Length: 142
Ligand code: 5GP
Ligand code: ZN
Image (cartoon, rainbow, N blue to C red):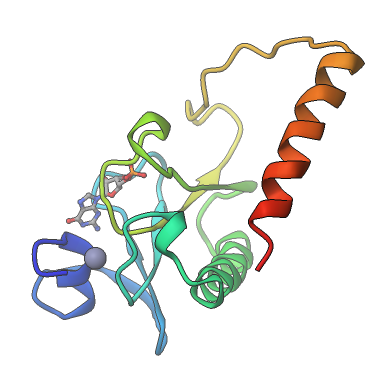
């Protein structure tokens, strides 16, 4: 997509600090890292969100993310854990509309966190939600 910053990175029209470059996937450092080593894994083929992403590309993005997460942990960076994070949609915090998987290296006290208040629904509510979702998931079977 011509006006997509991540497509520009894929095409070499915009600079990036590349960590992994494969035929269908590229990973590069996030320009505004949450923690040292924060990087993004993206499919080279443009997809604005998960609904547009071919599952094969999603599988390759995740596999690359899994490999890089292991490499981060084995690296000299002070990393004790890794969060994977993907924002799909404005309400989820997506700002760049080319699918990307965040890999955020973690260590105790690094200040990174997701602000959330856990709810306590009873089993009836959980079962009701699961039932509605089962029907929705069934409708999306390929
Ligand atoms: P989102 O909120 O869409 O999940 O995250 C977008 C991420 O892309 C942000 O963490 C932001 O710092 C990063 N980002 C935005 N523009 C650029 C860019 O031009 N180059 C790189 N490397 N990262 C970018
Ligand atoms: Zn793009």
